[in-house]
Length: 395
Image (tube, rainbow, N blue to C red; front, top):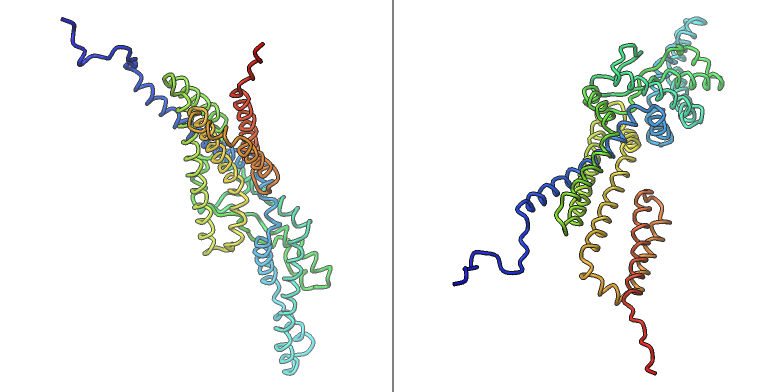
């Protein structure tokens, strides 16, 4: 009697090795970790260069002075600091009292003093506003921020020899002394002699940005900068391990998992940046910095990072589409061959669109263009391969 095959395997059935499920699980875990490491590498690289590289910091914060909201906020604070040093009304009354102490003279001084003070304050505001918009002031702004970043670097390096420190509430500030000196020289040039009463060391701190918890997070930023160079290699090794560990026939799927995890992590990071930016603007409501200026400064710092993460998101989704198409050609090849020229025209149009449409990150442009050009070539090769050569005529 032949042995029963009821609980055995059917003839011709390929039984997967018992370790295949574990390979699939391990491959998926490595792919997810690779995607997270890739996004972490982008964030760490940007943050590390911004914290440790003074030139990168200055290049980021320098153009902010051209923003109208920042100019209005800064000129308002400098004007207040100058006019608080110029008690014009009292100066007029004192000058009149030295010449005549009659009631008529004192009454005239009490009437004219506030009016002259108001006109002078208006002149101060106009002069400071023009000064803030000048190239000379932009150079002062750049130098002040360079000095502020050197203080930040000293704090990161735990150098006690720094001439200043970051506030405990996370405010990173610059001194307005040089800015007030520039405005003072302009006022004196316009004949406002009372401006000579402004001390040479007049000035207060202007908060460039406020990041609560920054002082306590400096060590974390330092550690982030140290691992920034390792994270890309970690992402590469994890992704390679995921592909190599995947069972035969499932390696494209591990690439899809890696791309999806990268896209998900990038999307989560972009949303987190939006929340952080909104928190900075809300926090500015109760500080000396206006919400509009805080929004301009936070966008200068976080905007490039958000753009890089959006590039990762788009490229990862493109990779998902490419890998899925490569793994399932039967689901789209027939339709694409029937509409070959339409598909190629759409791909070419999309390539031209991303090349000439302004405001798109370079990474997105290159990624989309490369995929679309590759799609045009692949479709053309497939179409020519499927063409049947004409049979020779019968003799």
